[in-house]
Length: 312
Image (cartoon, rainbow, N blue to C red; front, side, top):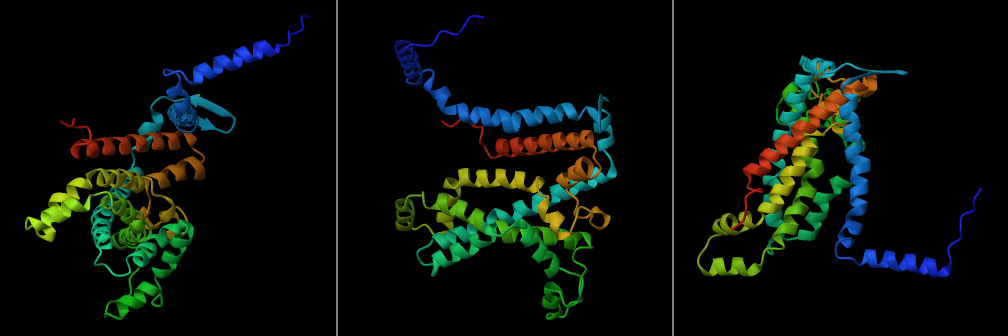
């Protein structure tokens, strides 16, 4: 059997020189820099998505896998899935309605030099984002309990209202979920808008003020247009976060079984089928449908906000 010929120092130097020329090549260097991203994207996103697409056409049982065509997608369109889709869409709508304009207004106030204790309020608003969602969900479940002595029932009783079953009535349950999201993510969105506000030159506001523009005119004609990229970014991640919400609902109801599925989300329905019922084929179909929905909604909002419009 032939033995491999050991490389000489000259051959090693030639190989090293070729690698150095390749690294400094104008055509190859960009690919070397983006290679880690390409590998991570292919390994942790593209491959799992392709595997899920393939599995969505299969019946996956212990020790048995067989293709069943579109059967999983036909089984998917049922009242429970429609309820989960409605809940996720409603939750996303209300979080967008609250977690974009309110942080924007707060950021404007916190960016003003007239605001007292600005750094204190910035830190205070960001603290909830550091709290584990498991801990936050547990605390909110206790605060919004059915007993008369729970925190929220005690508060509303002080104003003369009757105790409420917060997590058993559909409207109140959605209110609790949105309130939890608002408490937890308000500070993060405020920081995004603050970063955008601090990049707006002060000279623009000073020139507008000299020209007689009011505070409202400066906000509408300077602040809002220049914050458009940040607003679109916050809107995009909020859409994804709304449709991907699961842990908050799971912790509020101490499981994935809320009364009449008032807290069931699309990801919760995926978890119910794929993990709890061990139906990986149907769970994969739910995941693919969720990916299509979030991608479609995101592309539509990017189109409507002018992200794809060519700048003159």
